[in-house]
Picture 1 (cartoon, rainbow, N blue to C red):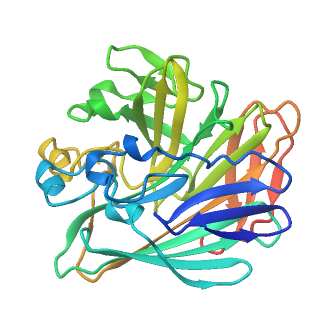
Picture 2 (cartoon, rainbow, N blue to C red):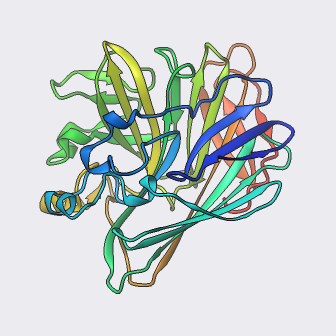
Picture 3 (cartoon, helix red, strand yellow):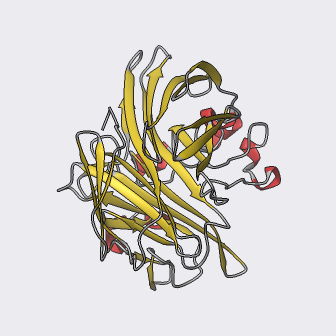
Length: 339
């Protein structure tokens, strides 16, 4: 475990799986990224590796492989999330790390920088195809919330627009909905922002096409704590909300964002002709030797009394301008370099 600190907060990374497993304000006991999936709950094809935890990254694919790929040893969500990462360099504010995923033929180099003054950090990940052939490709960031931060009153805000329930991927547009609504399998419409029914699914939405950046926040009234992410829309045009209930109570919520909104093997996406939804790609191609770069920023804050949700987040010269619905404008000196 490697921890970077500034005057406001700390961020911790576990080299086992490369996950960001801690992000806390100093003096606060609440860590929104405390999610840990028990080893026995991992998919069978992932059990030889590291269990999912905190905020991990799905490099190469999002979701399950095909039957043939599973027989060849492929795990869900790509191999990088279940391998040991290598620490390359570290200073007071910067951590550099990397991992080779031979089954995917991909190398990932990550630079994480904690802000100088704000409770925030920035991540840039460069993914290179180390195979001699090009391949279909996706990358999804998978921050996952759990108790005590997560409960029935935790609210998710984002600049999502049109979306689908991933179970309807064969004919998704027939069952489309607008954020914050989501259509269930029985036709019921639920509130995905603060779930008003116990329903396990993944709802995927495109980021507002009028915005330069995508953003998502989760707010816990119980702890008066908000965690947020922001990124270039051109990097990650999809927002994916995973929710898992046990005994009628919310257990996990993924506030995910990435290059796809379909949680299926590549072959099924091609077979169902769903490589384009709402004018957005659901599949990418990374050529032999090609390197792609993706960045995002994360932040924490404790909103003022009367906070009822987030209206917008913009990036101005690397700093965040945060507009709550009924509170004063918040400016964070994040100093992000790649957004």
